[in-house]
Image 1 (cartoon, rainbow, N blue to C red):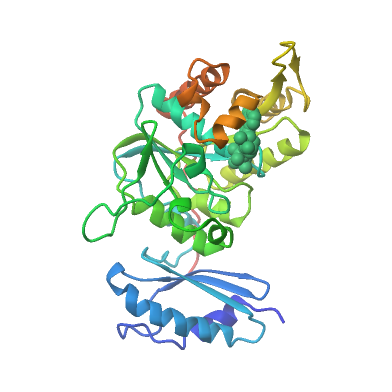
Image 2: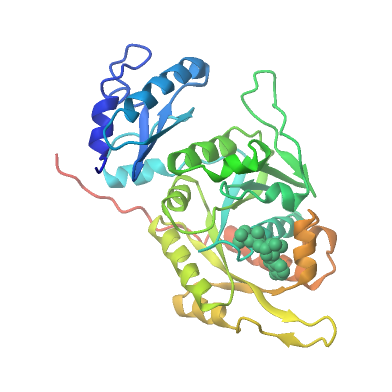
Length: 369
Ligand code: ADP
């Protein structure tokens, strides 16, 4: 039996809003309904001071949704954000892109079409390279399915509350860069089961409820892939641009193209493609080995008219340092890798500051009625 959005809405409309403002749907508390097979997920908006009452409501709402024939699982995320307004597609698109983060000049996404291409390694080293240029840098680990930033930065422990009300958290800090990750807040296995609307509400909270210092650039390590979660994240975050990481294999390039299309779809300018694990220089013979073939990403970038930012060689030291929380740019600044990352950082910063990344104006759609 297929569960539809209408089935869910009609059940939710029977539940009263807590402050007597009609039902929870008409009061605008329900958003981001997603249905995957027999699982129904959505977000329930609440003001921070009502979280306790809403917890009871959440139980009742889950029970009601579980009563719909065909529903086996109901996941309701409480979010302190305002629910998106109702409206036409153009209106929704304009409203959906979140407001700027106070004090943060540019947000950039580091993305990849699939996992394992070195996206997180690139994000951390790019952030550190931007910092080495004298910029103030923050990192948001949005890879909720496998948050690796705590490990890459060699940080453990939990962020502290920034004041007595406990409404905001202080970011963690290492190597001169501020960092926030879901990995500091929940055990690793919990992070794996986050889905759809919950990912978005968790990330919105990490982004907006962290007491970030003023920053020139915030680097966001995106979840790998180009599915709905990534698309929503790209759309709802006020990004200045995106960097796409790819390996030279054809398959990875196909995935990189998906990444490009995703950002284009939501009008986020692509700053460029970076080829990781591009070649291997043998430590013994000094020869360059192009294990996965070479030049694919550069050619592809030229073909589709996106800047090519550089080639990062495959290197055991990069892996060892990444995995032990000593990223190469911070701990081995004289290495070839660090120099390449600094070069990429210069290009990224130049693109951000040139103003040439202006996103196309949103299309205005006139709607009748
Ligand atoms: P992703 O974020 O795309 O899943 P990671 O950054 O976690 O990828 O990298 C996957 C693995 O590959 C990690 O063990 C990392 O240390 C290693 N790695 C990434 N880039 C390189 C590189 N240029 N040389 C060697 N190992 C790398």
